[in-house]
Length: 178
View (cartoon, rainbow, N blue to C red):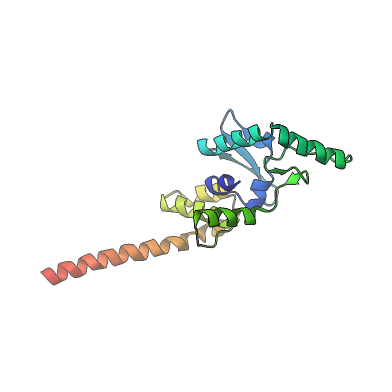
């Protein structure tokens, strides 16, 4: 799920609600139901595809199948949908991602406060840093308003300040030597 949040910039609910049928292995894409009910198609990178393969293999293990059978036996009037990130105890998508992120950060000794939406912010910032067109980023993130995407441009202003400082330092050096 972390890879869905980071590598394709999904909102937490978009990642939680992904279903196996949303994955198009032939074209290496995923169809994502966005906030508001519209859909977008995004490319899947090889790392995310490999992680999805691992999840699919895990869902065929005997222990996982027993969990599903137990759930269905205890909840005879319920069915389980084909969510990628399924909680076998509830039959619904995983909801407790924040604690998993906290545990991963503790293990990696990351001191910065990391939350699910931060991955999405990072994707937008990286794209802007690579000079990806703002309209392309808007479509990738699924923002209905360009102003939402433009919010990320403030992050890059610090880069502009640093560039300006570098230029100024060069000018000062040239002025002092001449």
